[in-house]
Length: 250
Image (cartoon, rainbow, N blue to C red; front, side):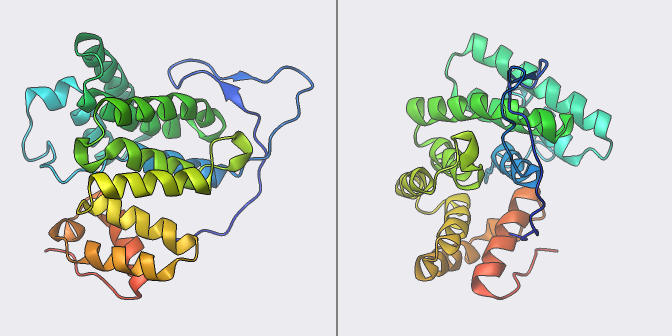
C-alpha cells in the first residue's frame, strides 16, 4: 500500500449515518484531532468488498442489483462525483431493502457496508466519521451470522477497520486488529484478501517474517493480477512487502 505523509487536521466527531445530517458534539465540547487522510483510508478500505467472484460488469444477475452490489461496482467506475454519490446512495437503499426482505442475509450486509463507506467518502471527510459506527456494527453482524462468507469477510473488514482507524475515536486497536486478522485467516487461509491485508498489518507491526510469508502466498494467486481496484490494492501491499513488482494480466 502506498504510504502518505501525514497532515494534521482537526475534526469534530458527529453522530448519525451517511444518509442524514451529521450532528456535532455539544457546544464547548473539545474537538477530537483526527487526521482526515486516515479517515479516508479507513473508509476506502472497508468500503471495498474484496471478492474473487465475477464482477457484475461481466455477469449481471438479479441478486447483484437487489443487494446493491451492482450500484457499488458502478460507483467504483464512475468518474463524476455526483454520479458516484448517487450510485452509492442507491446501493445503500437497495441493500437496506434487501435486508428488510432477507434479514441478516450476508450478501446484503456486505454490500451495505461497501456502499456506506463509498457514500460517506463522497460526502466528504468531515461528515464521513458518522458512518464508522454503523459500518462496525454491520461487520460484526456479518461475522456473527455468516463467519465464513467470502472467506471471513466480516472478520477481515473488522480487522482492517481496527488497523486503520485512529484510536482517538475508540475504534482503532492493534490488539483487536490482530485478533480479527487471525480469525479471518483461520476462516479463509487461502483467500487473497486475507493474505494481502494481513501481510500489510503484520508488516506495520514489525513481524516481517509473517508478513513476507503471507505476501508470498498472495503473490501466487491469479486474482492478484486482475485489473480491479481490489487487486491493485493487494498488489501494492505485496510489492511493498516483497520488494518486487507483480505483473498484471494483459
